[in-house]
Length: 206
Image 1 (cartoon, rainbow, N blue to C red):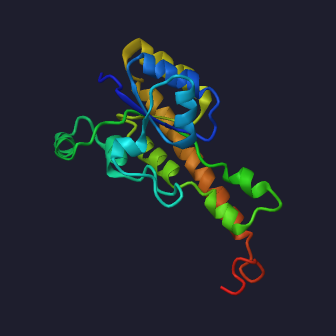
Image 2 (image 1 turned 90 degrees about the horizontal axis):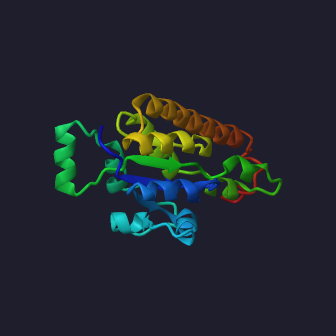
C-alpha cells in the first residue's frame, strides 16, 4: 500500500482541524491549504504550503479561482496504477494529492438571513470545493476525501497504523462526499427557485 504523502485542507467548518492537520504533519504528510484555513493552521505552528505557491498561480477574481488548476485536480485525479497517467504527471510536474479535507461555503446559513440578496447568495455558492470533492470521491481508489470532522479519528487511526486508509473506508467517505455535494446543489436550486425575476431588485433595470 502506497503511503499518503500530501493533503489538501480547505475548510469552512474548521473544528478540530488543528489537531487533525498536526497529526498528519507529524506523520510526514505535507499540508496544502488556502485562505483562513492556512492562517489558522500556521497560527497553531503547523507548516503549510499555500495552494497558490504549490500551483505557482495566484488566487484570482476575489477568491473565486483558487484551486481550479491542473496541478490540484491532476494531483487528485491521477490513478496511481495507471502508467499513462503517471507518465503524463511526470511530464507536467503534477504531484499526487492523497487526502482532501474540504467542506463548503455555508450557503444555507447565508440565505437563511432575511436580508440576504441574490448577489449575496451567489457569492456563497462554492465552486472549487465541490469540484475537489467530486474529483476526490471519483478517485476513491487512491484518494481519501473527508467532509466531516467526525471522520478525523478513523482516518488518523488508519494512517498511523499502515500509512494510508483502507479502501472500504475511502469508499464510504466518497459516498459521504457525493451526498454532501448533492444536498448542497439541491439547496442552491431550491433557493434560486424562490427568486422571482419579475420583482427581485437584481433584475429591475437590467
